[in-house]
Image 1: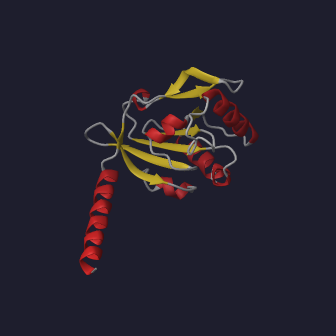
Image 2: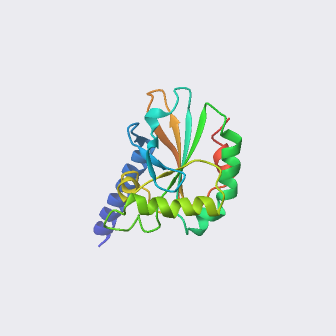
Image 3: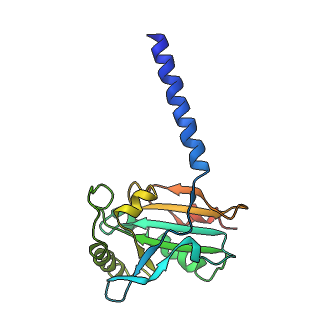
Length: 183
């Protein structure tokens, strides 16, 4: 019995170590594209973001995933607005908000992007969000490993010119959580 318990403990520890080492080396591909919204709340394919389009001098990217109807997402809006207002003119730091649907994470069928856009558009207007908002469907959320809302990634461009995940917040964030990474 002790041998089985010891073997299970060693296996568990090994899996944790592998998982942690992978987290350190996570990086995002620059060709991933998130569409924006037009002034009527529809999907705007000509207004997109991707890491490939970010200016060369940018060193830090903050990406916040949120969903309408998510109370922690609503609670963090004042802090996100403050963050955006302080860095919006910076060439070294960029902030992007990507909205989706609360149903997009666990839904086995991908949700239609136009339905997500109408939910996000209403949320953006209801809460007077001042920063640009882009969209993600079920496929994008799964690809980036988004597990719930809100979820915020701090990406740092390393010497290899890849965008590495420096920090991932799987909850509401506060302004101070972000500014510890910005000098």
